[in-house]
Image 1 (cartoon, rainbow, N blue to C red):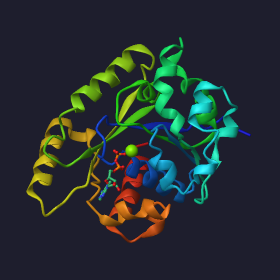
Image 2 (cartoon, rainbow, N blue to C red):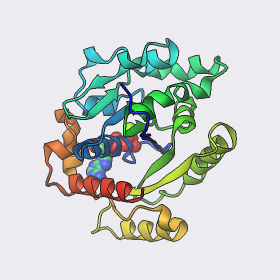
Image 3 (cartoon, rainbow, N blue to C red):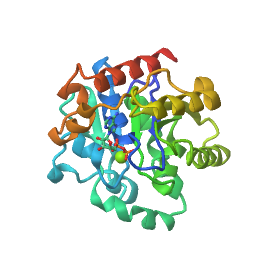
Image 4 (tube, helix red, strand yellow):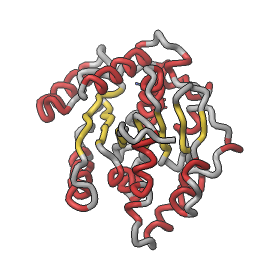
Length: 259
Ligand SMILES: Nc1ncnc2c1ncn2[C@@H]1O[C@H](COP(=O)(O)OP(=O)(O)O)[C@@H](O)[C@H]1O
Ligand SMILES: [Mg+2]
C-alpha cells in the first residue's frame, strides 16, 4: 500500500494568533498541492474545525477523526476521509477536540500522539499539512513534534511580529526535546493590502528580520478567499482566477522549488 522508497513531508501550519490565515492557507495550499498531482493529506487539529467545514465535510461524517486517533487509538485508515478534490484527503476535526488538551495531560506520551503515525503519514502521502489551533497547547506541540517543518502565516498588521518570538521559542523547545530535525518551512505574509502603507511596512520589517526565511509569495487580502468556505469549497475551486487563489498556486511552486 505504501511506497517505501519515497518519503513525504509533514508541514505544520502554526501561529498561536487566531485569524491570521492558518486555515485559509491549509485549505488552499493542500488543494493547490493536490492539483499538481501530489498525494496530500490535511490534518485538522483545530477544535473549531474550519478546515473540515471549508473542505465540505458534512457534520455527520466527522467521526472518527483526530480525537479518536489521539485518544481512542482508532485505526489510522478509519479516520482518513476523501474530499471532493482528487488526491486530497482529510482527517477531520470534531467538537470533542476542545476537551482533548485535558485528556492528553494525563498521558505519558502526550506530545507524541501524532508522531506515532509518522511512518503511515510520510510513506502514505507526498505532503501532509496540519492546520493548528490558535494556541501553543498540546495539540500544536503534537503537530510540531511530528512535523518536518513549520510554516507560519503572518498577517500584515501592526502587531504582526508580536507573538512570533513566543512561537519560535516553542519551536526551539520542541527541537531541543522531541524533534531535533524540525526546521522552519518559512513565514508567509497574509492579507497583504498593497494600498495600505502598513502592509509594506510590516513586509519590510519581517524581511529585514528573517531574510530568506520569508516566502517571496505574499497572499493578498482577497474577498474570494473568505467567501469560499461558506460554499464548502477551497478558493482555488470557487474562483481559480482570483488573486488569492493564484497566490496559493505560486506558494506551492515556491515550496516545490525549494527541494
Ligand atoms: N488573504 C485573505 N484575504 C481575505 N480574507 C482572508 C484572507 N485570509 C484569511 N481570510 C479570512 O480571515 C478570517 C481568518 O482566517 P483563517 O484562515 O480562518 O485564520 P486562522 O486559521 O489563523 O484563525 C477568515 O474569515 C478568512 O476567511
Ligand atoms: Mg484556523
